[in-house]
Length: 152
Image 1 (spheres, helix red, strand yellow):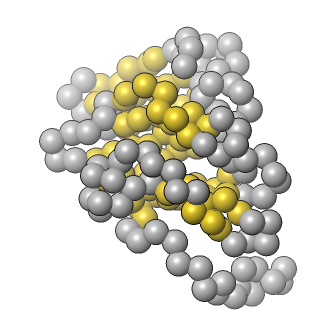
Image 2 (tube, rainbow, N blue to C red):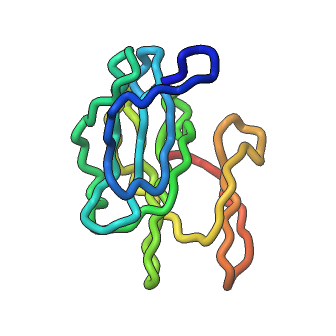
């Protein structure tokens, strides 16, 4: 924890092993930062931790169904326009595993949106000016493509 003067103290917290991507955001609307950690080793699932208001992070025990998939990174974005940050998890495998998008219900519970993305790189932004996030995805074999967000 930062003491307010740039000095940090170890809190002793030990979160999930093999974390490969981490995002901080207020997933449950209580005004403090919570955490999501994706893991790059098989057998370890994505973890969501809620902040107890004093900086201690408590595992929610959610099951993303990705314990046997290697996650490489994540993007936190409001993809469905409800004011809550959702999660785009980038998965990796030599044989190819599609990425998934999980929607946050505002109580820090995430559900699979059904959206499956297969890309090598991605950028999110409102390209058509309609107030929602569109994507530019790229595959090394196909080049970049633009997808407009019509509804999740």
